[in-house]
Image (cartoon, rainbow, N blue to C red; front, side):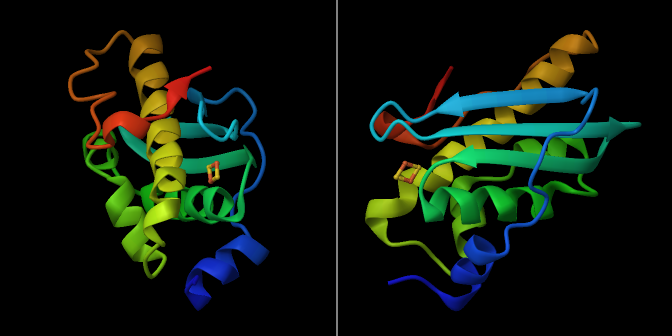
Length: 141
Ligand code: FES
């Protein structure tokens, strides 16, 4: 059901924790399953240099948030906003359809953290918060 790569991220999640005095903090919850994800980012000169997460949720949520923190490091804010849940799922070797909403949680946590960063720095939030997620979209908590 799950790829080896996903299982590996589930067993050994990368970047677990919280960045002290983070430049952006995102917290989202999935209203359907009740899972919660928190993502903190460090931004230096418009580039995400560090990302950490804490997830109270299922294995797929843990693996996707782990992968998101790996994928966004070194990306500009604009590039990170383009990161879709589908790209995260693909990077993990795919997710069963019933688990795609878990990757939406990771995408939303990232976007929420970026929005927080943009608001704190007085920048426009163009493009932030958009998602192809559809009705199962995660909501802010
Ligand atoms: Fe809730 Fe996976 S079942 S995020």
